[in-house]
Image (tube, rainbow, N blue to C red; front, side, top):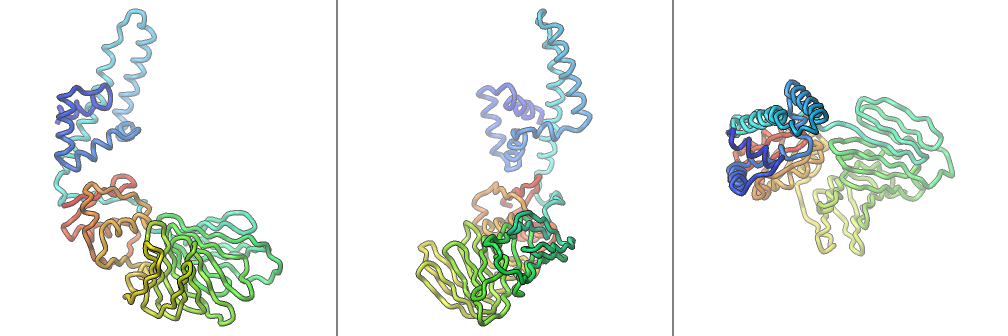
Length: 381
Protein backbone atom coordinates (compact mmCIF):
# COMPACT_ATOMS: atom_id res chain seq x y z
CA UNK A 1 0.00 0.00 0.00
CA UNK A 2 2.83 2.41 0.88
CA UNK A 3 4.62 1.57 -2.35
CA UNK A 4 1.65 2.32 -4.62
CA UNK A 5 0.93 5.51 -2.62
CA UNK A 6 4.50 6.62 -3.22
CA UNK A 7 4.17 5.88 -6.96
CA UNK A 8 0.88 7.80 -7.13
CA UNK A 9 2.48 10.80 -5.46
CA UNK A 10 5.46 10.69 -7.84
CA UNK A 11 3.18 10.33 -10.86
CA UNK A 12 1.26 13.50 -10.03
CA UNK A 13 4.32 15.52 -8.93
CA UNK A 14 7.82 14.74 -10.22
CA UNK A 15 7.00 11.90 -12.65
CA UNK A 16 7.61 8.12 -12.59
CA UNK A 17 10.20 5.94 -14.30
CA UNK A 18 9.23 3.16 -16.76
CA UNK A 19 9.02 0.42 -14.12
CA UNK A 20 6.86 2.54 -11.80
CA UNK A 21 4.59 3.53 -14.70
CA UNK A 22 4.03 -0.14 -15.59
CA UNK A 23 3.27 -1.02 -11.96
CA UNK A 24 0.81 1.87 -11.74
CA UNK A 25 -0.94 0.67 -14.91
CA UNK A 26 -1.25 -2.86 -13.47
CA UNK A 27 -2.69 -1.47 -10.23
CA UNK A 28 -5.27 0.67 -12.11
CA UNK A 29 -6.48 -2.38 -14.08
CA UNK A 30 -6.89 -4.56 -10.98
CA UNK A 31 -10.12 -2.87 -9.87
CA UNK A 32 -12.66 -0.26 -10.93
CA UNK A 33 -12.17 1.34 -7.52
CA UNK A 34 -8.45 1.75 -8.18
CA UNK A 35 -9.25 3.58 -11.41
CA UNK A 36 -11.75 5.83 -9.61
CA UNK A 37 -9.17 6.68 -6.94
CA UNK A 38 -6.56 7.43 -9.60
CA UNK A 39 -8.95 9.88 -11.29
CA UNK A 40 -9.86 11.46 -7.95
CA UNK A 41 -6.26 12.15 -6.95
CA UNK A 42 -5.56 13.55 -10.40
CA UNK A 43 -8.53 15.93 -10.36
CA UNK A 44 -7.89 19.66 -9.79
CA UNK A 45 -7.72 20.65 -6.10
CA UNK A 46 -8.80 17.17 -4.90
CA UNK A 47 -5.90 16.68 -2.47
CA UNK A 48 -6.44 20.19 -1.14
CA UNK A 49 -10.15 19.50 -0.51
CA UNK A 50 -9.60 16.01 0.94
CA UNK A 51 -6.96 17.08 3.46
CA UNK A 52 -8.13 17.23 7.07
CA UNK A 53 -7.67 20.57 8.87
CA UNK A 54 -4.69 19.39 10.94
CA UNK A 55 -2.72 18.17 7.93
CA UNK A 56 -3.68 21.25 5.99
CA UNK A 57 -2.33 23.45 8.77
CA UNK A 58 0.93 21.47 8.98
CA UNK A 59 1.39 21.62 5.23
CA UNK A 60 0.76 25.35 5.12
CA UNK A 61 3.26 25.90 7.93
CA UNK A 62 5.89 23.77 6.22
CA UNK A 63 5.56 25.62 2.94
CA UNK A 64 5.61 28.96 4.77
CA UNK A 65 8.86 28.03 6.54
CA UNK A 66 10.26 26.67 3.31
CA UNK A 67 9.50 29.92 1.51
CA UNK A 68 11.22 31.93 4.25
CA UNK A 69 14.21 29.62 4.17
CA UNK A 70 14.47 29.91 0.39
CA UNK A 71 14.45 33.69 0.57
CA UNK A 72 17.00 33.77 3.39
CA UNK A 73 19.34 31.02 2.25
CA UNK A 74 19.05 31.32 -1.53
CA UNK A 75 22.65 32.43 -1.98
CA UNK A 76 23.93 29.45 0.06
CA UNK A 77 21.84 26.81 -1.81
CA UNK A 78 20.77 25.20 1.50
CA UNK A 79 17.03 24.59 1.36
CA UNK A 80 16.38 20.98 0.36
CA UNK A 81 16.08 19.65 3.91
CA UNK A 82 12.75 21.46 4.37
CA UNK A 83 10.96 19.82 1.44
CA UNK A 84 10.55 16.27 2.91
CA UNK A 85 8.34 17.50 5.75
CA UNK A 86 5.74 18.88 3.34
CA UNK A 87 6.03 15.90 1.00
CA UNK A 88 5.63 13.52 3.96
CA UNK A 89 2.29 15.10 4.84
CA UNK A 90 0.97 14.65 1.30
CA UNK A 91 2.31 11.10 1.11
CA UNK A 92 0.61 10.13 4.37
CA UNK A 93 -2.65 11.52 3.06
CA UNK A 94 -2.35 9.55 -0.20
CA UNK A 95 -1.67 6.41 1.86
CA UNK A 96 -4.85 7.10 3.84
CA UNK A 97 -6.90 7.47 0.63
CA UNK A 98 -5.50 4.22 -0.82
CA UNK A 99 -6.17 2.38 2.44
CA UNK A 100 -9.74 3.69 2.64
CA UNK A 101 -10.52 2.68 -0.93
CA UNK A 102 -8.94 -0.76 -0.81
CA UNK A 103 -10.65 -1.50 2.50
CA UNK A 104 -14.04 -0.84 0.87
CA UNK A 105 -13.46 -3.25 -2.03
CA UNK A 106 -16.42 -5.50 -1.12
CA UNK A 107 -19.54 -3.99 -2.73
CA UNK A 108 -21.98 -5.86 -0.50
CA UNK A 109 -20.87 -3.80 2.47
CA UNK A 110 -21.30 -0.45 0.78
CA UNK A 111 -23.47 1.98 2.72
CA UNK A 112 -22.24 5.17 1.12
CA UNK A 113 -25.25 6.10 -0.99
CA UNK A 114 -25.64 9.45 0.71
CA UNK A 115 -26.01 12.77 -1.03
CA UNK A 116 -28.48 15.14 0.57
CA UNK A 117 -28.54 17.40 -2.49
CA UNK A 118 -29.75 14.66 -4.86
CA UNK A 119 -33.49 15.14 -4.49
CA UNK A 120 -36.40 16.13 -6.67
CA UNK A 121 -37.85 19.49 -5.67
CA UNK A 122 -40.40 21.98 -6.93
CA UNK A 123 -38.64 24.94 -8.45
CA UNK A 124 -39.18 27.08 -11.54
CA UNK A 125 -37.96 30.31 -13.07
CA UNK A 126 -40.49 32.61 -14.78
CA UNK A 127 -39.24 35.11 -17.34
CA UNK A 128 -42.08 37.62 -17.64
CA UNK A 129 -43.17 38.94 -21.01
CA UNK A 130 -42.79 42.55 -19.92
CA UNK A 131 -39.34 41.92 -18.45
CA UNK A 132 -38.13 40.69 -15.10
CA UNK A 133 -37.64 37.27 -13.58
CA UNK A 134 -39.34 35.34 -10.75
CA UNK A 135 -37.91 32.28 -9.00
CA UNK A 136 -40.68 30.24 -7.38
CA UNK A 137 -40.60 27.25 -5.05
CA UNK A 138 -43.17 24.83 -3.68
CA UNK A 139 -43.59 26.84 -0.49
CA UNK A 140 -43.70 30.24 -2.23
CA UNK A 141 -46.89 32.30 -2.07
CA UNK A 142 -47.01 35.36 -4.29
CA UNK A 143 -49.26 37.37 -6.55
CA UNK A 144 -47.92 39.81 -9.13
CA UNK A 145 -50.56 42.43 -9.91
CA UNK A 146 -48.69 43.95 -12.81
CA UNK A 147 -50.63 45.33 -15.77
CA UNK A 148 -49.56 42.88 -18.45
CA UNK A 149 -48.52 39.82 -16.47
CA UNK A 150 -50.69 38.83 -13.49
CA UNK A 151 -49.05 35.72 -12.00
CA UNK A 152 -49.96 33.83 -8.84
CA UNK A 153 -47.98 31.03 -7.16
CA UNK A 154 -49.28 28.71 -4.44
CA UNK A 155 -47.61 25.49 -3.32
CA UNK A 156 -46.12 23.91 -6.47
CA UNK A 157 -48.45 25.56 -9.00
CA UNK A 158 -47.95 28.84 -10.83
CA UNK A 159 -51.09 30.35 -12.35
CA UNK A 160 -51.09 32.77 -15.28
CA UNK A 161 -54.33 34.62 -14.63
CA UNK A 162 -56.91 35.72 -17.19
CA UNK A 163 -56.54 39.27 -18.43
CA UNK A 164 -58.98 41.83 -19.76
CA UNK A 165 -56.32 44.15 -21.14
CA UNK A 166 -56.42 44.58 -24.91
CA UNK A 167 -53.55 45.28 -27.30
CA UNK A 168 -50.94 43.40 -25.32
CA UNK A 169 -47.42 43.22 -26.68
CA UNK A 170 -46.31 40.17 -28.68
CA UNK A 171 -43.78 39.24 -26.00
CA UNK A 172 -44.36 35.94 -24.20
CA UNK A 173 -43.85 34.44 -20.77
CA UNK A 174 -41.26 31.69 -20.44
CA UNK A 175 -41.44 29.15 -17.63
CA UNK A 176 -38.27 27.11 -17.10
CA UNK A 177 -37.91 24.10 -14.79
CA UNK A 178 -34.26 23.28 -14.01
CA UNK A 179 -32.46 19.97 -13.58
CA UNK A 180 -33.72 18.17 -10.50
CA UNK A 181 -37.04 20.06 -10.47
CA UNK A 182 -40.71 19.72 -11.38
CA UNK A 183 -43.51 22.27 -11.50
CA UNK A 184 -47.16 22.75 -12.43
CA UNK A 185 -48.48 25.62 -14.55
CA UNK A 186 -52.14 26.61 -14.73
CA UNK A 187 -52.84 28.63 -17.85
CA UNK A 188 -55.45 31.36 -18.21
CA UNK A 189 -57.96 29.01 -19.92
CA UNK A 190 -57.77 26.46 -17.07
CA UNK A 191 -55.34 24.09 -18.84
CA UNK A 192 -52.94 22.43 -16.38
CA UNK A 193 -49.37 21.58 -17.45
CA UNK A 194 -47.22 19.27 -15.31
CA UNK A 195 -43.64 20.13 -16.27
CA UNK A 196 -40.74 17.72 -15.91
CA UNK A 197 -37.11 18.62 -15.18
CA UNK A 198 -35.07 20.53 -17.77
CA UNK A 199 -38.20 21.72 -19.58
CA UNK A 200 -39.36 25.10 -20.89
CA UNK A 201 -42.89 26.29 -21.66
CA UNK A 202 -43.44 29.46 -23.71
CA UNK A 203 -46.93 30.98 -23.50
CA UNK A 204 -48.52 34.21 -24.75
CA UNK A 205 -49.73 36.84 -22.31
CA UNK A 206 -53.22 36.15 -23.58
CA UNK A 207 -54.55 33.46 -25.90
CA UNK A 208 -56.05 34.67 -29.17
CA UNK A 209 -59.76 34.42 -29.94
CA UNK A 210 -59.37 31.53 -32.37
CA UNK A 211 -56.43 29.49 -31.03
CA UNK A 212 -54.53 28.63 -27.84
CA UNK A 213 -50.92 27.96 -28.76
CA UNK A 214 -47.87 27.25 -26.58
CA UNK A 215 -44.35 26.00 -27.22
CA UNK A 216 -42.63 23.19 -25.29
CA UNK A 217 -38.99 22.23 -25.02
CA UNK A 218 -38.50 19.09 -22.94
CA UNK A 219 -41.28 17.04 -21.32
CA UNK A 220 -44.73 17.83 -19.93
CA UNK A 221 -48.16 16.35 -19.28
CA UNK A 222 -51.11 18.44 -20.52
CA UNK A 223 -54.65 18.42 -19.11
CA UNK A 224 -56.28 20.68 -21.69
CA UNK A 225 -59.42 22.62 -20.79
CA UNK A 226 -62.17 21.97 -23.31
CA UNK A 227 -63.02 24.82 -25.67
CA UNK A 228 -64.72 23.81 -28.93
CA UNK A 229 -64.17 27.23 -30.48
CA UNK A 230 -60.42 27.42 -29.84
CA UNK A 231 -58.14 24.42 -30.45
CA UNK A 232 -55.13 24.01 -28.18
CA UNK A 233 -51.81 23.64 -30.02
CA UNK A 234 -48.44 22.58 -28.61
CA UNK A 235 -45.41 23.14 -30.81
CA UNK A 236 -41.90 21.76 -30.49
CA UNK A 237 -39.80 22.58 -33.52
CA UNK A 238 -41.50 21.00 -36.57
CA UNK A 239 -43.70 18.79 -34.38
CA UNK A 240 -47.21 19.99 -33.56
CA UNK A 241 -50.01 18.50 -31.42
CA UNK A 242 -53.52 19.93 -31.86
CA UNK A 243 -56.42 19.21 -29.46
CA UNK A 244 -59.78 20.54 -28.30
CA UNK A 245 -59.89 19.05 -24.80
CA UNK A 246 -57.84 16.06 -23.67
CA UNK A 247 -54.99 14.67 -21.58
CA UNK A 248 -51.69 13.62 -23.10
CA UNK A 249 -47.97 13.29 -22.42
CA UNK A 250 -45.54 15.10 -24.72
CA UNK A 251 -41.83 14.27 -24.62
CA UNK A 252 -39.43 16.24 -26.80
CA UNK A 253 -36.16 15.99 -24.86
CA UNK A 254 -33.13 16.50 -27.06
CA UNK A 255 -31.51 13.13 -27.74
CA UNK A 256 -34.73 11.20 -27.03
CA UNK A 257 -37.29 10.02 -29.58
CA UNK A 258 -40.13 12.58 -29.62
CA UNK A 259 -43.31 10.92 -28.33
CA UNK A 260 -46.94 11.90 -27.86
CA UNK A 261 -48.92 9.54 -25.61
CA UNK A 262 -52.71 10.01 -25.45
CA UNK A 263 -54.52 9.23 -22.20
CA UNK A 264 -58.04 10.40 -23.06
CA UNK A 265 -59.80 12.46 -25.71
CA UNK A 266 -58.31 12.91 -29.17
CA UNK A 267 -55.22 14.63 -30.55
CA UNK A 268 -53.86 15.32 -33.99
CA UNK A 269 -50.08 14.91 -34.35
CA UNK A 270 -48.40 16.67 -37.26
CA UNK A 271 -44.74 16.51 -38.31
CA UNK A 272 -43.66 18.16 -41.55
CA UNK A 273 -46.16 16.77 -44.11
CA UNK A 274 -47.44 13.84 -42.00
CA UNK A 275 -50.61 14.10 -39.89
CA UNK A 276 -52.10 11.38 -37.66
CA UNK A 277 -55.06 11.35 -35.28
CA UNK A 278 -54.52 9.38 -32.06
CA UNK A 279 -57.02 7.45 -29.98
CA UNK A 280 -56.69 6.88 -26.21
CA UNK A 281 -53.87 4.42 -25.31
CA UNK A 282 -51.98 5.18 -28.49
CA UNK A 283 -48.56 6.70 -28.91
CA UNK A 284 -46.98 8.54 -31.83
CA UNK A 285 -43.20 8.56 -32.30
CA UNK A 286 -41.08 10.39 -34.82
CA UNK A 287 -38.49 7.87 -36.05
CA UNK A 288 -34.96 8.52 -37.29
CA UNK A 289 -36.25 8.99 -40.85
CA UNK A 290 -38.69 11.70 -39.78
CA UNK A 291 -41.78 9.49 -40.09
CA UNK A 292 -44.58 9.27 -37.53
CA UNK A 293 -45.07 5.74 -36.16
CA UNK A 294 -48.27 5.04 -34.21
CA UNK A 295 -48.66 2.10 -31.82
CA UNK A 296 -50.98 0.89 -29.04
CA UNK A 297 -49.38 1.22 -25.58
CA UNK A 298 -50.04 0.94 -21.87
CA UNK A 299 -49.94 4.64 -20.95
CA UNK A 300 -49.11 4.08 -17.28
CA UNK A 301 -45.28 3.93 -17.59
CA UNK A 302 -45.30 7.15 -19.63
CA UNK A 303 -47.43 9.26 -17.28
CA UNK A 304 -46.63 7.80 -13.84
CA UNK A 305 -43.90 10.40 -13.25
CA UNK A 306 -46.48 13.13 -12.60
CA UNK A 307 -48.04 10.94 -9.88
CA UNK A 308 -44.69 10.66 -8.07
CA UNK A 309 -43.88 7.18 -9.41
CA UNK A 310 -40.74 5.94 -11.14
CA UNK A 311 -41.73 3.37 -13.75
CA UNK A 312 -39.50 1.70 -16.33
CA UNK A 313 -40.58 -1.39 -18.25
CA UNK A 314 -37.73 -3.46 -19.68
CA UNK A 315 -35.59 -0.38 -20.36
CA UNK A 316 -31.81 -0.31 -20.56
CA UNK A 317 -29.83 1.01 -17.62
CA UNK A 318 -28.41 3.67 -19.93
CA UNK A 319 -31.92 4.99 -20.63
CA UNK A 320 -32.92 4.79 -16.96
CA UNK A 321 -29.86 6.64 -15.69
CA UNK A 322 -30.35 9.38 -18.29
CA UNK A 323 -33.78 10.07 -16.78
CA UNK A 324 -32.48 9.92 -13.20
CA UNK A 325 -29.75 12.42 -14.12
CA UNK A 326 -32.44 14.95 -15.03
CA UNK A 327 -34.70 14.23 -12.07
CA UNK A 328 -32.03 14.28 -9.38
CA UNK A 329 -29.56 16.72 -10.97
CA UNK A 330 -26.69 14.22 -10.91
CA UNK A 331 -23.96 13.14 -13.32
CA UNK A 332 -23.75 9.42 -14.13
CA UNK A 333 -20.38 7.76 -14.84
CA UNK A 334 -20.38 4.15 -16.09
CA UNK A 335 -17.27 2.25 -15.01
CA UNK A 336 -18.43 -0.75 -17.08
CA UNK A 337 -19.90 0.27 -20.42
CA UNK A 338 -21.53 -3.10 -21.13
CA UNK A 339 -23.85 -2.66 -18.14
CA UNK A 340 -25.58 0.18 -20.01
CA UNK A 341 -27.41 -2.36 -22.19
CA UNK A 342 -28.77 -4.44 -19.28
CA UNK A 343 -32.57 -4.12 -19.11
CA UNK A 344 -34.50 -3.46 -15.89
CA UNK A 345 -38.14 -3.12 -14.83
CA UNK A 346 -38.92 -0.76 -11.97
CA UNK A 347 -42.09 0.61 -10.38
CA UNK A 348 -41.45 2.49 -7.13
CA UNK A 349 -42.24 5.75 -5.40
CA UNK A 350 -40.30 8.78 -6.63
CA UNK A 351 -38.45 9.46 -3.40
CA UNK A 352 -37.16 12.88 -2.45
CA UNK A 353 -33.63 11.48 -2.44
CA UNK A 354 -32.02 9.17 -4.96
CA UNK A 355 -30.64 6.59 -2.48
CA UNK A 356 -33.77 4.36 -2.27
CA UNK A 357 -34.04 4.35 -6.07
CA UNK A 358 -30.47 3.16 -6.53
CA UNK A 359 -30.83 0.55 -3.80
CA UNK A 360 -33.93 -0.85 -5.55
CA UNK A 361 -31.91 -1.32 -8.74
CA UNK A 362 -29.02 -2.88 -6.76
CA UNK A 363 -31.37 -5.62 -5.51
CA UNK A 364 -31.13 -7.21 -8.97
CA UNK A 365 -27.51 -8.14 -8.11
CA UNK A 366 -26.42 -6.97 -11.55
CA UNK A 367 -25.11 -3.54 -10.64
CA UNK A 368 -24.05 -1.40 -7.71
CA UNK A 369 -23.62 2.35 -7.28
CA UNK A 370 -21.40 4.77 -5.44
CA UNK A 371 -22.12 8.45 -4.88
CA UNK A 372 -19.08 10.71 -5.07
CA UNK A 373 -20.02 14.36 -4.76
CA UNK A 374 -22.51 15.02 -7.53
CA UNK A 375 -21.56 11.88 -9.48
CA UNK A 376 -23.16 8.43 -9.54
CA UNK A 377 -20.49 5.81 -10.29
CA UNK A 378 -22.00 2.67 -11.86
CA UNK A 379 -20.25 -0.70 -11.52
CA UNK A 380 -21.12 -4.18 -12.79
CA UNK A 381 -21.47 -6.66 -9.93
